[in-house]
Amino acid sequence: MKFFIDTADLDEIQEAHDLGVLDGVTTNPSLCAKIGVADFEGHIAKICNIVEGDVSAEVVSTEYDEIMTEARHLAKIADNVVVKVPLIKDGIKAIRSLSDEGIRTNCTLCFSPTQALLAAKAGATYISPFIGRLDDISDDGMQLIEDIVTIYDNYGFETEILAASIRHPMHVLESARLGADVATMPLKVIDQLLHHPKTDSGLERFLADWDKLQEKLKETAE
Image (tube, rainbow, N blue to C red; front, side, top):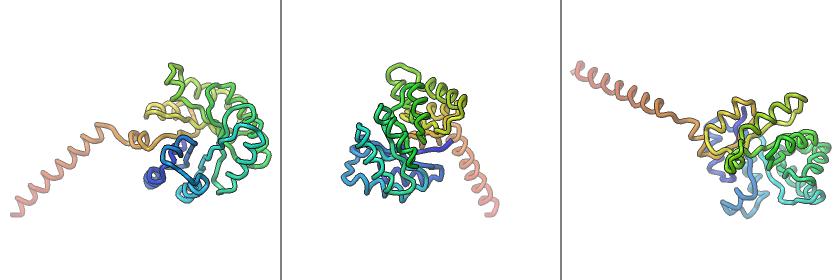
């Protein structure tokens, strides 16, 4: 499974990159607005300079011609830019055209298996099912992942399943268990994946025992 970080914060991206497990980045207008990005294209270029893997940059247009113009422009920022396109009728049409032009896409805001099926048929590079937002309304986000994995396996679609809107480590675990290709998550969740109370207590005990041994050796030497 590939790990992407879902943020526009350069410091968070650098921290995840330095950890050595980061494969890419996803961004969206909300994340950029959160940190006050003024120069969107320049900011995407900075992210691409940090990360060698795919960086999803989202269009804000909703009509076919405007999506195509914006997507072509974004794709020129760097070779590792993947254009995020919303899962709407004009978005699917644009994904088909962009795929034919060799521009990679991330079809975003997916909430149903049939939407994912259309995106794959249109040639999307990634499909982004938003599992956390489904859980928020008492629906089953993980069932969506399972359904998409089954459908894509049935027909050999090459579109990668990018589990998005991840809220906690269990989302990552279940996505990996079900066979999602990618999980994109905030830095907080990446950090949470590292921790377990038994690891912390075990390390504390090892270090305490080591200190006791050093004290004994010191006493013996004296």
